[in-house]
Amino acid sequence: MESQHASGESWLSLARKLDWDFSYVDERDVFPAEICGKPWLDGNAWRSWDEPYKTSYSSYVATQHEKEQSLKTVDHVLGRLRDFQSLDVAWLNGLKLHAAALPLAEFAATIGNLRAARFGRDGAWRAAAALGALDECRHAQIPLRMMHKLVRWDRQFDWTHKFYHTNCWVAIAARRLFDELLLFSDPIEFAVATNFVFETGFTNLQFIGLASIAEESGDRLFEQMTMSIQTDEARHAQIGLPVLETVIKHDPEYAQYLIDKWFWRSWVVFAILTGFTMDYLTPVEKRKASFKEFVQEWVLDQFLTSIENLGLKKPWYWDTFLQSLDYYHHMVYASAYTYRATVWFDLVVPGPGELHWLAEKYPNSWKSFEPVWNRIHEQWEHCDPGVDFGVHGTSIVGFCNMCQIVLCQGTPEHNTACTLDHKGQRYIFCSEPCKWIFEREPDRYAGHKDLVKRVLAGEAPANLVQLLRTYCSLDFDSWGKDARKGEYPWLRRQPKDPRKEEG
Image (cartoon, rainbow, N blue to C red; front, side, top):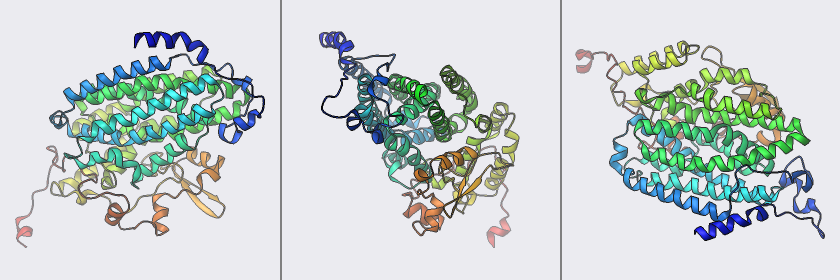
């Protein structure tokens, strides 16, 4: 292996840039603009493409083999059922959330990378994308393998594989993002949107933060799993920067649009996946920082530095985004808890300790959320533990026609939902950025139906329980409930009137 590795490294400088001039076909036929993306430039314009971290195939295989062996050892030692049973129930449900959202999205990223491996405009870019495709295939396999053993213990873990094949509203929203990001985008948009914005701006650092919290929560297997994935993300995330630099040189307005669009599209999903886990599903004594603090430290500083160094501006909606740091994931979590049977994982009610922590971490916004949770506390105090639908919404909520997430932007006092009439139809959006994205590319988005439109079209039932069972692929064993069955020691349950009991 060592001799093969040395041989591969010695040839790397020659093998990276395998490009040539075409003598009997036109370059546009080899790299069609419709597939390669815009701006279409001749090959010479891409010759400066260069990735900072270079690796040969032999070196790649040796490194991945070591990581797989290490992960296999950790799984053997820490992946037993009793290890999971010892974890806090709230953290386990954060694990279910991430385990479902991750693997098949990673598999879709395999396809996006393979498209770039054929139609990327520089040989080194294509080679890096080919290794990226192998990375993403591995990332799909890891959580599927790790979580499979838990399905017999808890059927909600079956959603690790099942999630994207369902019509749960979270799955609809996630598919809406990842189908466009990973399957629909051309190599240029894929590199900027996925490799630069999503991976460099969000997931690369998300994995670091989650691994730290997992270690603190006692989930060493999830910690090792995320770190094993993160080391790959850090390498192929570098594809995006040299692509973006070339786009800026030839079409700076389009480059700015891609940054503005994909930062917002990525943010609304990222805020749910990571915000829920960090601020609600991690035991309060194990929390190192709030989700807002994490984003400010790990995402904003790096992202802003990156785009400013490139001469780009902050997204035009930056003030809206900063406000959403204080409000958005809290509003979606309250909605998800109220309609928890519409998801595949259980949720918890923040108690006095959690509420105090949230008030300290979100001093500008938390007073707006106190009445929401006080109302839920009161409902549980008048309801028997375990009677989950006694403290549950019954109507179908509204969804954004762009991001497909519940209309939860703005604040509890002022929701920012807005409408647009387009070709005789009215569309509703959670925010001005979602509306703006739709207006820029209406033909790309107008045909997609949210859950409410599917009900109105007769494609899905309006009755909530029937909707869950027949359309969302949920049943009593798998739909979300209160993780503690409403049995919170700090609740002041109302004593029952024995005369009413007798009656």
